[in-house]
Length: 145
Image 1 (cartoon, one colour):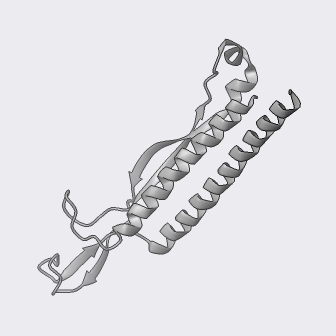
Image 2 (image 1 turned 180 degrees about the horizontal axis):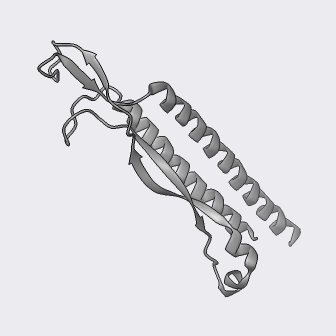
């Protein structure tokens, strides 16, 4: 495995974690949105990650069995949470139904905060891995002088 391969794997993880962070931030921003363009309250979303085979960068990499086992991460889909909406009795709310019940989004704020912290930690770990590979490559270049 060369340095570019390691950087490619870490880079894919950075992209995936950024998407996870963006979705969690969107969920938090819409935690009280009772009216969307589609109608009804906002539906919480979550990111599904998947492992994707790392393509070889040249013919030799394609023949190398180690490269075939390497995987990078990618966002497979963004799915909507199937949890029921929160129902609150508030007849004065503009989105209340005939019985005075308002349906609020199914966003769990605590869960989203944990997801943000987890995505942040994973992002930081991948930045550290990326920087380590970069520093090793620079040291190798210095040795070659």
